Amino acid sequence: MQHSAVPELDHTRTRPMHWLATATALAAVVALSSVLQPDPATAVQAGPETPSAPVTAPAPDPAAVDFPIECGPYEAVVTKKASGDLDGDGLPETVAVVRCDAGSGSPPNGVYVLTQGTAAEPRVVATLVDPAEQRSVTDFAVRDGAVTATLLGYSSVDVPSCCPDVTDRAKWQWRNGAFVRSTPPEARGV
Image 1 (cartoon, one colour):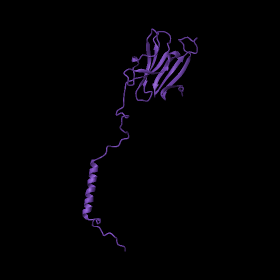
Image 2 (image 1 turned 120 degrees about the vertical axis):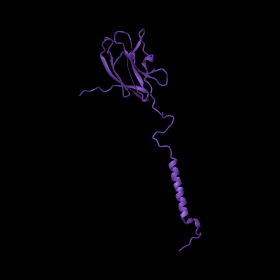
Image 3 (image 1 turned 120 degrees about the horizontal axis):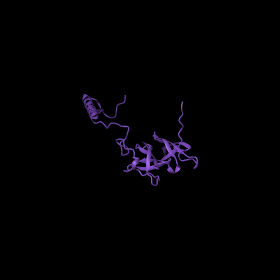
Image 4 (image 1 turned 90 degrees about the vertical axis):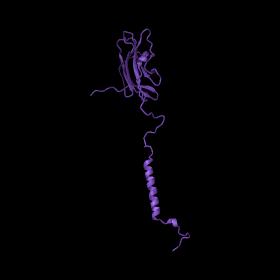
């Protein structure tokens, strides 16, 4: 048997006093940790880009907008309007169908997208149908982030303005910073 070169040290032996001191220290750590708790964990980090409450705003009012439609001596009139969040920013936009109040015939419509933003007054941010296209708008809706409409027009200048002979279905959706027009699928019956 080989003996240690270092004589046995007195503090390497465990005595009841050592066990009592260790148990007291451990009890103090457990008691202190139950009092000092960290903040509860959350899935969302707080920061300036995370609003504390959802932002709600009223839809822009088309009555407060000067539309880019030339009506001469007549007034521009909003014939249809619908609101919804079209660009996914959580704030509603309003889409307005506007025509000149000429009193006879079928004056062409313009379809405009309005936003309120942080400005005090609503403003036109997009023209979906320009009145110069000589179209009338029917079956107009804003649903699921898209604008849909039926556009009535003319195949030639010989067609009377009372009786459009061309019908197109259109759908606009916000993609990559602009409204993109497509043709929606036709509704099918059973």
